[in-house]
Image (tube, rainbow, N blue to C red; front, side, top):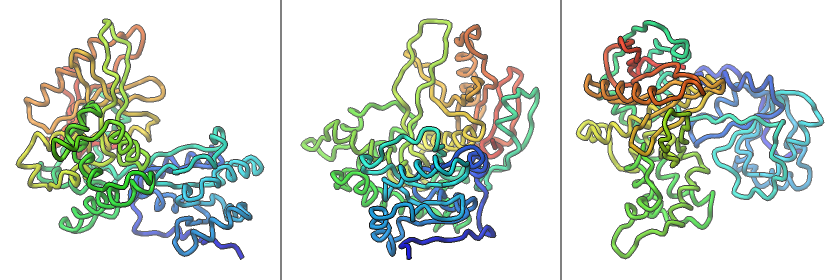
Length: 436
């Protein structure tokens, strides 16, 4: 008798909210032997993977974890037994299963055999001898976008913006107070649908779990939860910036005698990346007409704006009283949604800034070379005009003899009654209207 939990999937899960990842996962299962679904805890990886699995092994189940580890030493193939696609949840608990799956995938010589889910990279990768190239595909899941959670009406398609429509028009009903709540609630699937009072508690519980437990699990040397809280609070204050580690060190110290070393702060930041709490935006490097230098530092973001809210210890009313902070955290929410939508379109989201301070909040760049420029604003005519001016200035610097011209320029707003195309070609879209 094998010491594992094997479950045949009941596909009739009426409570399940479809995710953008469902479309990607369905396609990947037709293309690769094994798919690794990764992302932050509580974002819905296992629940989504369950919808596509034929059988399931929950490696981290406390009732069977130690027995599964023993079985991995004596007969690891037993852990791979089950109807395909065979889902292995929290695979990083037994890293050597990676090579076993690669070997088994080679011998089965078929697609859609295995699904792996994990909320961190393995703490010990010495047991993994192969990269998995050619056998594995990677899918990064994030917390729910507003389209997935039902707050966006989805009347403006980002895919259609790449086709450069001459006119768009739709309405958004989201008010600023609702946006403040959505920033604080975040996109945690369990929070969606809860009473607002209880929904707001989820991000605080997530934050506490990260600093008290998850960081230690990924790196046993990082045991100071107070230090972790201070670093995450500093990161929250610097969302959407290229703040260097030296600034985080200074910002995180409690008193003059306890400045944190750069190496220490870097260790904590790297641990937060490994458990998918942080996902920085890489620099976009276009061909420009001039020799202007482009800043190469990544832009700092939490994977969900509610993590920053919890780190700062604030709530919706605090954001309403401090619109500057709300603007920074709305940018984090908007970048999260753009990442979810871009992944479905086979693209990524980057950040642009040159040495003269010209900055574009988000560049949605597709694998085929087409891209869109996005400025993120709370709303209001003045901010929309500022965003449009920035987008047109950046467009004028791009060398279109060496790369495509931007497919679209969009000011993505928190609020605003209408989505529309301006006479200068810039789209103005409230986030409550956007979908992939």
